[in-house]
Length: 177
Image (cartoon, rainbow, N blue to C red; front, side, top):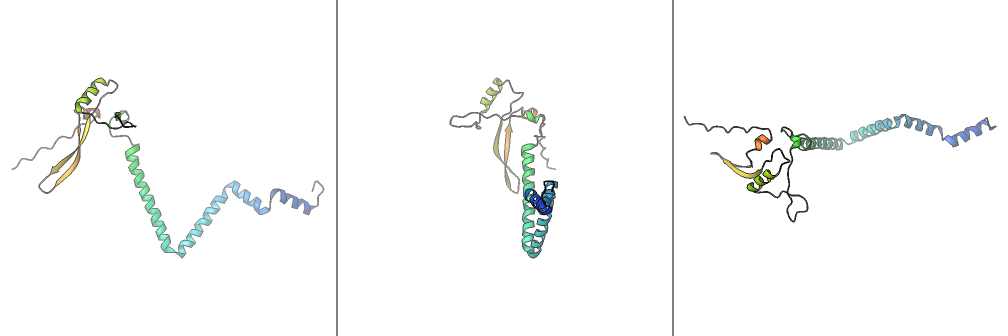
């Protein structure tokens, strides 16, 4: 209107430049972050209406989501305990596992050593506070009712002291009366 246009022409030019009133209102809502909240409320109402029309599907969907959440929580709890929490040893951040290089193996792999080979390695390795040898082996424990098979670990004599632990004393056999 300052440029000498008629009011109707000025309004038309303004709308062409800035968009219609509804578009300006929408832009203002988006700038304030209300559009996402409004959309969420609309989606929630729509979901409730659809679930009301088909309650069997609603029950199946809620059950599936609940099971998914439970399974994810169980997996995370297990992974957290196994991978992220420190070991229950003194100075567990200083515990390392040594792998050897075997011909034909591209990556370092557990080559296994004999106990005399371990003792020789231990005498030559000066960078470690302690070295512990171990070996897993199956063990059968049986009583009068049924035998049970367990996986036992043999460790070198310094194993408990290296981890700052004390062995559990062996229970004494009961004497017959």
